[in-house]
Amino acid sequence: MKRLFSATKNSLRGLGYAIRTEPAVREEVIVLVLAIVVGLFIAPSAAWYVAMIAALLAVLAVELLNTAVEKLGDHVSPQQNPKIGMIKDFGSAAVFCTLCLAGLVWFAAIAVRCGWL
Image (cartoon, rainbow, N blue to C red):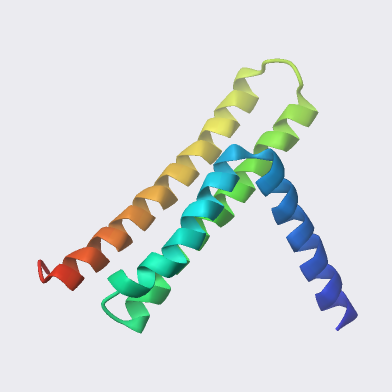
């Protein structure tokens, strides 16, 4: 139980630090909080609601991993480095993919709710 408490504390500290220092994380958390409320009205069912929120949590998780990779890259190579830049671009592409996934899930939920699908 002590390990679980410690891991939770570390996770929340990391999330808090990311929210305070990273604009992209802050924006995604704001969207997530709004989506938790708005999703209740849009989701065609409980399963859709879970999928809609899960997609946004995936975006946040990948953004946090991307931020960690970027911070590590900046620490390892403070100077401009094309290979580190390429690695950062990979992380950015991963965030883009999850944003597309979230958009697709939300669009499908809206389409089902409106009777388009």
